[in-house]
Length: 81
Image (cartoon, rainbow, N blue to C red; front, top):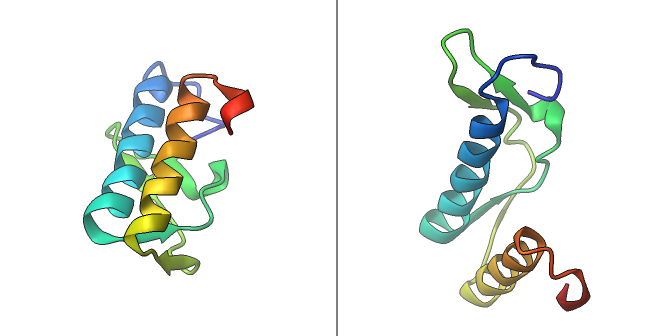
């Protein structure tokens, strides 16, 4: 995804963030290796997430902490991270 020159890469990054949040909050699973090489844009413009070899089952308190961390990063509240 990081090497794609397509115009929808920003949209796919948003899709990736939503997908990771759904995995975390609805299934309790954290994909522990979300680097750009594990995110691909398919020929038909869909997001493909690769390499589920590093996942972690997360308890509710860790889910909340990770959500709070992501919210601070998204809001650029780096002092709160």
